[in-house]
Length: 426
Image (tube, rainbow, N blue to C red):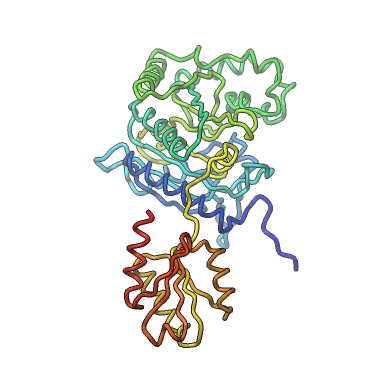
């Protein structure tokens, strides 16, 4: 039987996994500095959570979810995004009762969507995301945007472009919704079947349709900016003012529409324009979702968040030629010759590793020359050679692989010697 990896998934192999670990370390540190705490939710949830939380008019719910029945007949779904799960946990664990609001949370983990695999878009993909729940202060919007921008900059990306829009409050959205229906209805039969279904349920989603994006009515569609009431307009202006104070440049795009039903007021995307990455492309998007907590059974608790694709981040870094400073090579490779020195090598490795030194040895019974070749392939900073003669004398020969310098030292001094040498190279 020829068993292969499922379509739309990938193996992250050594040599690449170190890049993932590096950007993950930046992510954890950025969130720590912004005082966001990590939350870990299940990979699968009740299907109804995503139907209610993401929106039953979205492509995600209608076409892309991995849904199955368990042995008790309950409908479960592999999570297609992170926000609904975080909000469900916020409600279920009554985190709205904490005196520390907003509840500032971040997550890292795999998501699943059944769509056509292509570059930067997998069926299993990894997202970093944050959610700040419990405050309607526009300063939280600015903070969340600043966190996203700071992460990309510290990862090494250049040419970032922040795009903003406001979807307005409920009153503004209703006025805009009515205007969109009146605009598209006379010619809705010229649009795809999905857009025809969206007309009455959620006409805003028509603006996000890729199939009909070149239809003339798209260009003349009513702009949400023109339907913002005074309160929504003031809110949006405050977000812009705060970003100005932070020194974060942005552009206003009235056509920016987030793909999920729960967004209102602030919506944003971060794009990149770089050689080798094609046209301007979206790296991340997010926005405010006042009303989602109530939809999932909690009290009124406004929130805002974003999610980004790790795969797309790494693609962008590669396209810009950014070399991540991942560790290459090990600290010490232990070369042993003879039965007793080989046994002693196990104890030596244990001591080195407990001291924080990255070390390894041969387990295939290779000749000395082959062991040195292995040390070269592993880019060892030092090799420590223990033969029968050295072992009987309680000595070991240590070679600095960069300078070629060799020194015979007491075996019991090896750990201290390597620590001193390695500290001098950092």
